[in-house]
Image 1 (cartoon, rainbow, N blue to C red):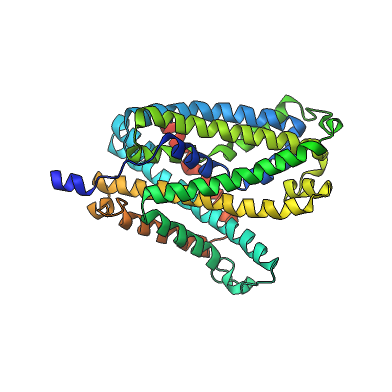
Image 2 (image 1 turned 45 degrees about the vertical axis):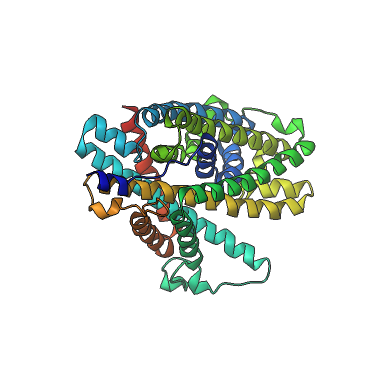
Length: 379
């Protein structure tokens, strides 16, 4: 019994700072470059900042539930573990697979989006990936496998198998690059803000602000993945609340600042475009920043993939430890202290989806698991 327990023990190396970086890495993806503009144009106008604040407050309440559980029960598994303790095995089984669905489809959909950005980035250097190898399975459209999407998932999964300390450091570096790009836009754009673009401030009324909040709510999803790290945290009672609430706070500040500058640079009516941040920065003649923003988007998506992969593998590890899946799923490599078998099984599953399934279908399925998990934890 003691030997088995020793073999399945994860290493406690994660600090409060690592948790905040983990949360920011999971939450901030390409949405920060797209949502503020499109939602401002169609729902809230410059009052989009209130939409982000309202959505952040709602997520804070859910985040406090996660923080309370994660500090009281510092075990990997997130909502699955909490529902197991409170409601029993059946509800936990449902919650656990809902989270696997959330993490798995999130990885697949973000990797598919990353592939599109990466292919476009390479084309800027006159490097072309064959069409047949750069899209989902669609013989009529001439695509058979999204190789870049599969490739980035496999690379980041390999990084996870090296150890949680190594993957945390890599995530922190990528998060710093991502935040640096966002701050570059904010600090450059603030000098081109025209206060008259904020008038009218609330063109769609309070109803528009609230409907905008319902949409941008999904920009905060990912903080729940932080609770998956509870068993690998040095001081979970202190650090888990800091990690969850801190990452939400940092992301809320970034979203509000980007929205404020964006709607100040360009009239909100002009922001319903595919890439509103790049559009606005080109509008003021700072074309060189647009290329850096593309690099920031590529890096930003990589952190989301990494953290969601991490959360999914820890869920399968918990299933194996609790006997809901074969015990081999909870095997931990004694050198790296990571569950390598569950990592590669989960990776193969999501890589298959990323390589073969279109992005639109993946995105439609992501939110179901998230909302169910939030409901169970809050109850």
